[in-house]
Amino acid sequence: MIPELVRRDVKRVRREAEIVLEVRENFIRETKNPDPGLQVIAVVGSGEAFGRQFDEALLSEIGQRKSRPYHEAYARSKTPAASHIGGRRNWLSLSEEQYRAVAPVVFNRLQCIADERFAAWKCGPGNPFYVRTHRAYYSRKQRRIFASENHKPQPRGTRFSVSVSDEFFLRDVYYAERELNVGLGRHMRGLARYLDLLLHHYGKSRKGFRNPKCVGAAKDRIETSSLSRTPYLLAEMMEHHLPHGRKNGLWREIADLIEWDGKKTRQMELAESALDRPEVRLGSIQLRVIREYETYTVFEVFPGTV
Image (cartoon, rainbow, N blue to C red; front, side):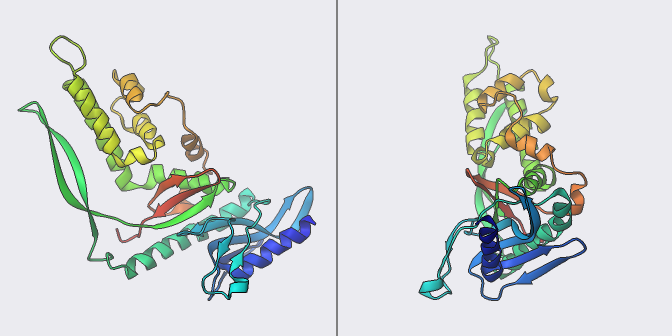
């Protein structure tokens, strides 16, 4: 029964997946489906599970846009009888050797897809999408906080999703977000310095107590930050960008503001456990995790031209 289900999943992705990557000992074969029912990148190869060796099995799936890895789907381009595509089983996974071989191909393909879609958008090259952005800053002379709003070009990316069972991929996604995303790193440094300056230099009243106005301003800035959508990035901000790190006298106070207990988050541990030589696999890809679900994580890959 198990071998039959494994073969059925392979047959299904070969027929329906948009891209199939076949991993073999000495080569990787890429096949594109001209009429895909599943917007996924499927990885097929040999594997072992349930004490058995399989010459061909589904090892990984990366979802594109609204498609989710291993989930059932309905193909609009198919006939009504063939429109329903059942879910696949994530029983097998890539070995470390297989992942090292296929990961550069996968991340390069994700970047190519993001670039191609960006070039076709109305708000593409030469016509960026602008969003209203909040900015808070200090006047040292006036010892006041000023707030302003302006419109800044906002890079838009293409969304993909990876199963939480594909841990090698997941580790690299969190590593790339933390270490390679230039805009995110700049934002985290700016927010960390802002909070440090706000509470350390301007946060105390004449009686020596913390100025409630500054505490309120710090809370508002944290809540309006894009980092609040993925709270673990606030912990990353403190861990890697707060001036003087854990030796900062305000470390515990800021940790309380972001509701962090100081322990490493699951995302930190995943990023730190990424395989060595990540630059070989990731290149200079710019990505950002958008949302985390119980069975999969959604992330956005930005075009290389941004």
